[in-house]
Each structure stands twice: as structure tokens, then as C-alpha cells.
Length: 402
Image (cartoon, rainbow, N blue to C red; front, top):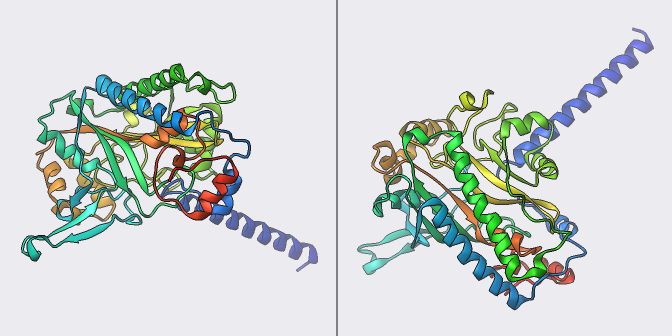
């Protein structure tokens, strides 16, 4: 064997190993990216928090503005979508199966406790809700909602497994809504029509609060566009095949500052879903190729915008057309969760005892943080934060409420 041939083989082997390592790094990055957009460590967070931030409103003005904003959004969501405001539980019975597991890998578990009612003669094992997704669909029947009618809730939840950063909190506040639909509306066009109605409310809310507080109008913080851009997760992957999800979202938001990403939960062409989704509420398995003219699945998605204060991607809402009896069974089977069919919620879907629906959650603090030009969730909501986070925020003129 010549030295040259040996060198060539060595060079080729090194190149192959580097390519393999790069591929493994990409795959590991994509896999780590599935469970959510949290940052993960406070050294990185300190670099991300804006260095030149100054709040546009005082603490008192902020409270006034956010309560006016909340009222505007609630009223107009109900008007646009045909909803009524209803009460929503903070705790649910474990046996009901209506708590939200957030994703399908079991990594985010709810707070659970035992109620020894009547000296344990009539006890209840309860959980603090992580979201009201399943409860809302059951409630549609309870409130006798018909097609085109629905409910909206001022939902509070606790998600104890989040890393607490600038836009993730253990305390969650959402406008959780659900609306009855018909079988012939289970398509992407209907999904998009509902997204547009929600977007109209958010754009209107921004103008509304700026009329009250003109100082919120700042050239450095452009307003929301009148229309958002729809893009399928497969299309986004095709554009940036070597990038993990968060990077794909970040880059596309430089071009389109408000987007709705369709099809979240089904494995894409690279073998990974855009993000994990639970198997028993959003329909992410339905083939939509007849509408998109490409190999696509899913009747759900997320609204994301570019946050000009934090200079980062900013998720406002997750929503979708819900599973029917067929797609529930298929998604549970694909997720190895068929045992969940024993729960009352799942039985109600399988036996067509509750309505077909579309629904979602709009983050209240996420939305007010964006529209009031805040750098941290803690400026618009009161909850627990670690000392290290509060100290770094104080250095950057970010008032974290206590």
C-alpha cells in the first residue's frame, strides 16, 4: 500500500467520522428540541436578556394596561368565535383522565395530592391542572354548546417541570377556549379561518392598548403585521433541513414576523416531529396532502411572533382541530398509550358522547408581555422565580413582581 493511498484513506476516514459526528450532533440537537423551547441554564439566559432595556410603562401603568388588555381580548375572542366565558377547574380528579400531560413522553407530570375526605371513607386523588384542554371539550356538552358555539376560560395552571426563564413560568395563565364544529369542517381551511379570527383580536388589542398608552408606540418595536403567514412544519423543515426546530423558527421569523406553523406532532421527513404533542387532544395524524399537495399531516399548529424586545421567537398560542374517535385511537396506538382508552374522557370520544371541536390556549402573560413591550414574564404576572434570575433581572432594569 502506498503512503499516498494510506493518507487518502485516513483523510477519507476522518472526513467520514466528522460528517457522522456532525449528523449525530444535529440529531441530538433535534431530539433535545422536541419537548419545548426553554433555554436550560442561567448563564445563557443572562446573555439573552436585553442589555439596553428600559420599561415603557411604570409598574402601576402596567397593571392598568394589562387588565384593560385582558378585558378587550376576552370580549373580542368571545365575539369573533361565538364563545361564552365559563368557570374552569384548578384541580381535577385523577380518575377522570382530563388533566393535560402536555406531551406524549411523560416528561412533564402534574402535581398530585390526596384528599382524605370524610376520614378516607370518600377520598379523592386530585391533580392541579397543567391545562384545561380535555376538560373544555367535556364541558362543551355540559354547557349544551352547538356547532359554532363554544366556551372561553380564564385558566390558571401549574407546570412544575419547566425551566424558569424569561418566558417560561411554573404558573400558567391562559385563555383556554373550545368551540363545537362539524365533521365537514375538519380541514386546514377551517383551521386557518379560526386562526385569522384570533389574529384579528390580537392585532386589535395592540392598537387598543396603544391608544390608551401612546408611549408604547416605539419605532424600535414594530407593531404586529395585519396578517400572519401560514407555513407547514414539513415546508419549514425542507427550507432548513439541518437545523433544529427552534433555529428553524428563529430564522423564518426574520422573514415573516408572525407565523402559524401547521402540523405539529407527526414525525416529519427527518424522523422527528416539529415538537411533541399529546396523543389525545390535537389531531396531528390526519393526512392533509389533498389540501397541501405535499406529504403532510396534522390539523393543528402554533402562533409565533418575533419579539423585538427580547430579540427572540415568542410563542403566543397553541391550537388545533381535536381528535375524533378514529384519530384518537390511531394516535394512542402510535404513542403506545392505548391503555388510556379506559378513562372517561377517552371513552366519551370513542363513543361519540362529546362534540367534535376545535380549541386552543392563548398565553395571557405571554401576550401582555409582548404587547406592553416587556422583557420578562415576571413584569406582568406574580409567581415564584429563583434568586439567580431575580438578581440578573434587577441588574438589567427588569422589575420582576413579587
